[in-house]
Image (cartoon, rainbow, N blue to C red):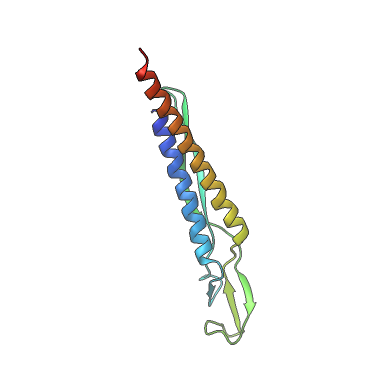
Length: 130
């Protein structure tokens, strides 16, 4: 495994994290007819992967899981999806938290790109040495 492999995996993991946050934001405010049908936020879970041959440690996506957050019950008897009690269930998405998640993953992605550019520049300068 090389520095570029490690960086590629890190970028891929942050992209999964951004996609999960984007999906959550896209579903914020959606309503369903029952608690079971309501959208639940996605969370990317990462794990460390150690290459014992060279000592490099990288990240791998362990999975993308649904949150166990409870949907929010709202009494709205005029809504077309309202149940017999006049309730609808909305997605328990905290839009502010999802925006922070997107900003953090975006910044981490940028950091990895910067590290790759620095490594590339150092390699080019090494090759130019006489």
